[in-house]
Image 1 (cartoon, rainbow, N blue to C red):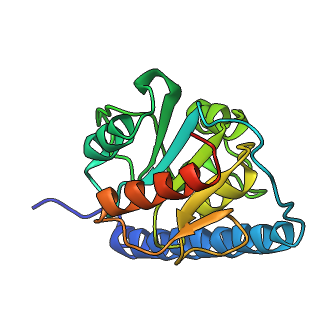
Image 2 (cartoon, one colour):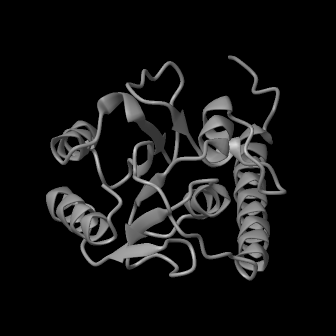
Amino acid sequence: MPINKSPLKPFRKKQDDKSNMFIKYIKELSLKKILKSTLKNVKTAVLNSQVSSVGVLIDETYFNQKNDLINELINSGLKRDNIKILVYKDKIKKNEAFSFPVFSRKDLNWKGDFSSNHAIDFVNTEFDLLISYYDLEKTPLLLMTHRSKALFKAGFSTIDKRLNHLLINTNVENYKVFVHELFRYLKILNKI
């Protein structure tokens, strides 16, 4: 008859899970506090030139039609080579393959700095236009939008109004409506 050498093992596992959840919760609170304090210093930007380079930040949790969105942007007049995509995933599985660069909450440290090369490159690129394609507020996405060096930012009206210069009132499932409205306003502003 085998003897169980560690009767506390299941108990330790539950304790470790609770500890990890608590640490994630505290980290999330810390990141929200950092975001809140930096949003007080938001500067308004003016796009003085035509839109040529575009960054698209997508939350894959609720929107999987990335290629359809990109094709809609191309059909509206953008060049594919001028569009850079970064996808956010809540959890990244081991050995998972991606068609676009991806980042997750794990790519943020306690100070709100990004550690992933994809995220660092994206946030430091001076796009003419950043499209924040998410309609639910998640701290990593908000920090990415806020810290982006993009000259002009467009997003959904459900997101904090201080993050984007142009707010579009629709939801993520209606990507055609979003792109149509975006380009309608860009034409009015003489940016395309």
